[in-house]
Image 1 (cartoon, helix red, strand yellow):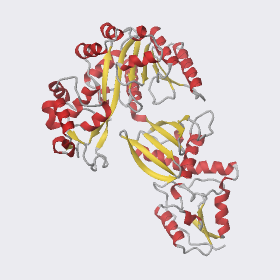
Image 2 (tube, helix red, strand yellow):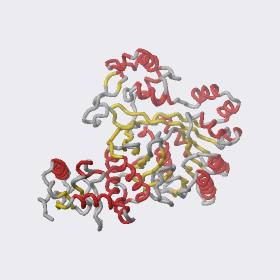
Image 3 (cartoon, rainbow, N blue to C red):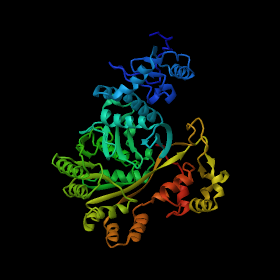
Image 4 (cartoon, rainbow, N blue to C red):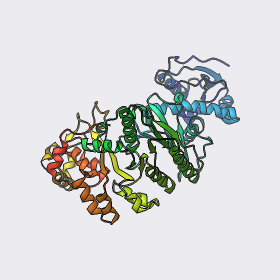
Length: 532
């Protein structure tokens, strides 16, 4: 065996270092140091730092190209000349026993941690890993849009998913099953970047492979209790504040996944605890715990193997929470009849209760609760259900590269231009669309997201109209007498202020047809909105 020249031995820097393990395991079969099929015939990089090179092929273009790549990545290695059979056996023996499988997980954890850290730097809310028939696609959700990050081999994706679920997640049965739907979470500090409190994992089989989505839960989600910083209007923030000061009653937030409901609830409860100097006993029942709330007692629902078991566990956790002397209870989500009955029962027994549900709007929350099996007469009792809130998140146009709507290609859409003009009136000149991107926004054209919402502080008249089936009458009463503002109208104030692209607003809240006259929208637009 003859030694080849040793490759560059620089410090790893920003590049993942080879994991320190006791037995050799190939790194060049896949992942960040993957070699091509032709290169793998002649070489094998091991996680002990050795680069096995087939004797007589030291000057092969494939070998030289791969070594040059390792040098560029500042990967420290030592090259050894071996027979072709030894190169082949190094790949074939990688999974002959459990030790090799554990070593594979160890190597892939480096890749997984680096991927999560990269997503954090991009401020992504989710990571999508799609294992397809012949390849793996990795995407980040940034400002509510999916951005393709990389493409890997199918084997790389399968190993990455197995490592994330089996070696990094906290779950009672840590066996990753690509053919089943599975849920888990990552919460151990040493497995996460400092910016994250946790990661929520969901998997499912697909027609050509499998998919895993990782929801990133950031530590700074509740750094301030000021709801206006999220994008709520001053009136909406005041209304939610009034709801938080009631001794009892149920307030329900609605919106699709990723609409910021959990963040808003965290800030509401953090503000409630701070306002009462920590003298209020706030308990949460969550599946899983998403964000830390200083001063609250947060209880997770234990992982259950089936939806039925999870439903029973959730209902039992709500009942248990009511026996622990709480002043305020937050239930993570109403997802079925058992949890719906639990939150209503908690409100009936004199507790202040906060929860979330999937519904299309504030008034649609009532329909959703009835659909889950609750009696209409109880759902429309203003002493039990005190607040209905619906929210969405819309992207904020970068103030440095945004373009006036009238000067943009978007204005050529005559139907859109007519809708915008009718909706914002004299504020038309201030309307802007996203630009092409600049150094300030990282080339995206956007600088975060802001809340658009509608808030209903219920009363007897409002619920009487709903109970009688007069939804239009209830809507008109809310807008005229309860200080209401629809999702569309709230979005339009931000369009009129030039901070939200009207096309983006329509994708989130629908056609820009206001319930409020343009003059009021223009006045409300003064002051703009806040980034998230």
